[in-house]
Amino acid sequence: MHGDISYGKEVTIGIFFQWDVTREAPEPIIDEEEKVEAIQAIQEAIRDIQVVKFITNTATILPEQAKTLDNLVALLQKYPFAGLELTGHTDNVGTVQLNMALSLRRASEVKAYLAESGIASERMVLRGRGATDPMEENLTEEGMAKNRRVTIRVMVGR
Image (tube, rainbow, N blue to C red; front, top):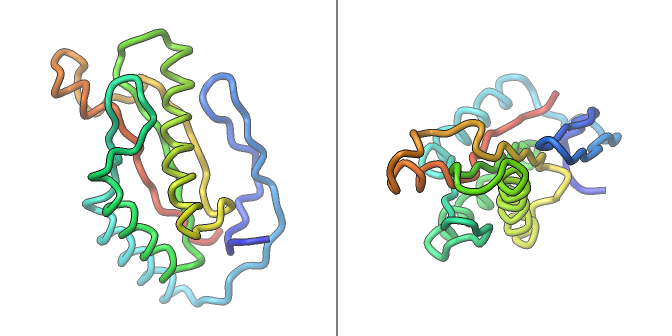
């Protein structure tokens, strides 16, 4: 089994999907000061990579996002006890059901990219929010573009 984080709870994804991430794993041997330092370092480093953007109605990672995700991989390799919450979002084009599924596919694509780069799948939790949590209003193409994204949140230990 890979990874150093035990989430130990069921996570509801979107409206229609559930993913049971219950598992047993040993707690990493790190002190609280090291945890705080790691969280601060990761948060500072991901400030510029907290959002992965997408084109309308796609879950394909754009080539310009690869360097961003590669930087995230390097951080996760440096701090093996850190995990991620990957939350997919969409603009308001399409039905609620399609947007929920698309948002989950976007989060899954980011997870797959990170997993193919050597990050254990167990370190990542997926969520799909559809168009329910926009960054901007969906009134302009610019606003809609900002809403087509995957947000990244760092989780460390229990």
